[in-house]
Amino acid sequence: MISVPDRTRLTPTTSRTNEPESVKSAILSFSLVALSMYSTTHAGVILSDAVFVHDFETITGNSIDGLIGPDATKATNISPSVINPLGFSGQHVQGPDGTSHGSIDTNTRLTASTNSLTFSMFFNDRGDTGTARFLSSFDGSGSSSDVFTLFDSIETNSSRTLRFIVNSGSNLKIASSTASIPIADGLWHQAAVVYEGGVSDGTVKFFFDGVQLGSQVTLSGVSSIPVMPHNWHLIEDSTFDSVPNEYFRGGSYDEAALWYRPLSDADISSLYLQGAAGAAANVVPEPSSLAVWLIASLSLSLRFRSSSGARTRRNDVPATNSARD
Image 1: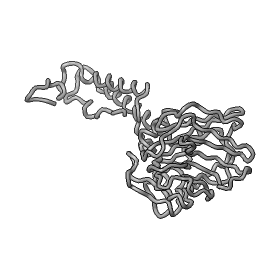
Image 2: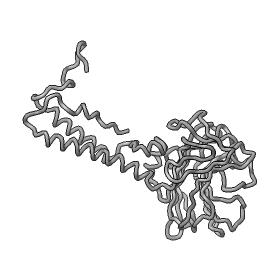
Image 3: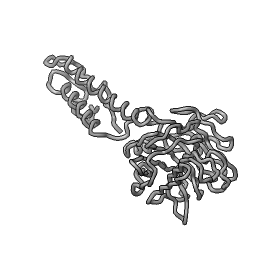
Image 4: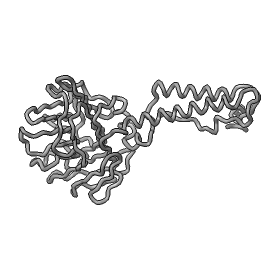
């Protein structure tokens, strides 16, 4: 995290007589303004154009307030919970018990084809095995004429992987992560996917807990994601898919966000480290070359103010047993 020095500590108790105040003020102001611009820009780039962001902190009845985007509508068998919450979140949602369908309608839909997409969500399987739908526009019919996109984790042969599926109605394409993720560990994890279309094929990168999971996967014949006839849903498909025991019976979910553009590896890491709400608050997760330059600029400004013997600062008093800062 970048720590901005306390501004009061940059002001000497008596001003220097051999350096214009305007010069010192200009240096300090430039440094602080530039750092503020960097912080705002970094977080703003992550969230400003999101389709939706849900941190599930405010739920009234079946309505979920959208941090960004429209409010979502949950099924009655999905309930808010504060038991064993995600580290930076006080409340999350608990999925259905596995015996009945229950999803969250984000009240958003892909109304124009897109050549890129990013989705991120936190989940906790609560020690359960099986599949976890994260994002889906699948209507559950299973017909080859369906047009849908979904992102989930699936367990086969005692191995759990992440999966991204695009079906344009006659062209079902599946990308699976080349590395596996833990099964039934009862811990919070982030799962994310970044799709980018090309001239004729697409590429998919999976992320788990802020880092890329395995190798990039080619999605042959998928140069873009087509218009979807159904809304985006979280946790399960848009309608009952007739396999009620397929999903986590006690799973928990939090911090769901969607973009129609590719997020960078650093952006995915930021979401993992601080969550969507943290990014919205303009918290800068880690230094960059620009941030390092800004810190150096602040240090230079401080040095201007603290060099020469024309002033006295509390921090200039040598520490002794009787006088310590």
